[in-house]
Image (cartoon, rainbow, N blue to C red):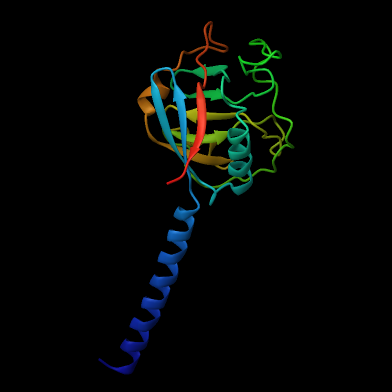
Length: 190
């Protein structure tokens, strides 16, 4: 081998080492969330590499127990299941009102948009928002199938890695007559 080939191999090695390290760091920052539904546990992997502020706010709301008892207030066949209104959609609270579910948020501030090119495919969790791109707060949705038309318009913060069949069983409606609830949501360390 000549000097040029050795130098090229050295740079390829260094670049590979750097890229593997970044990939490893990105995956180390991901956490696992368990969302207990009526039929079983949905396992979600967070994506702080795509939406660090959104992931952080979701984790804070989970750690404070705000999602426990929250209904799925907008569930559209072939599209998505939306939940996360901790103000009016929490069936355990005095403010619960199924007719207002989907209009509230949390006491935390709204989050600036963290849009990405990540595909809104089956099992992706993304933040719901109003027309203002910087209005996401606590509500999120889970895609039932490919919803790539949403790419670049909503902040992806996680993906279902196990238990999507339990999401598929969520009662449909806007709002459903007897909405399903998040029984419990908790952060599980890898």
